[in-house]
Image (cartoon, rainbow over all chains, first blue to last red; front, side, top):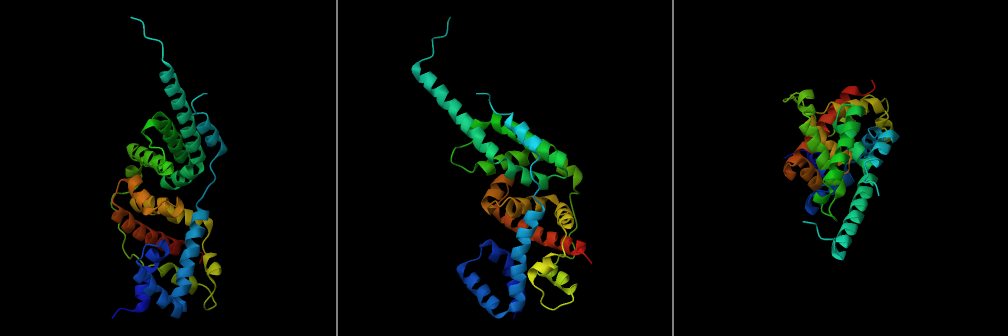
Length: 75
Length: 197
């Protein structure tokens, strides 16, 4: 029999992506309700995704924005 | 042979086309921040990203008639951008074709490693996250091999659906899912290697 925490680890990405079947979601949720160790890792992963997105986002240089606007067809 | 004068119908059609074109250009420009955000992480430098975005808009404005109104314009623009990027052949030169990915870690690996570096047991997630600097995140993402990185950038940074990412990169949706899964693990492995000791 597989370790339930290993199984839960395997389900983490599709769980957070919302791509698991209802049965699989219920299975993962049952484990997470009982296992604070896995639940903490799921919460971390969720925060990490947001943190990474913010960290790697650079504002667009205003000069580029002006160059793109200049490409419009003149009215 | 003189051309016949334009009919009222022709004039109307031309006026309608001009309006459609203006609307297309405005809608495309409104998405430019999001297009740049993805471009910046798909290519290596800011200059390359700027060139690529500019070329994307030049091509999009030339081929605007090929866009089907009501479909996802952001995905259409990104499709142009990724094709231009491939045409330039930059990625192939920069990234080795086969990157050995040995010792691939599981999905809890990063958390386990960061937590082990903290003195207290069961620290809260924010404290664990603080072990990662912004620069280390940027570098860790840049070091993910491009096939995997493209998918991670589109889905996790650009917030595209699996289906949109598949269409943009012209690969099956199953390939998007497997590259995403693996790309995220490689990213986390890179992050673990760079974590503040």
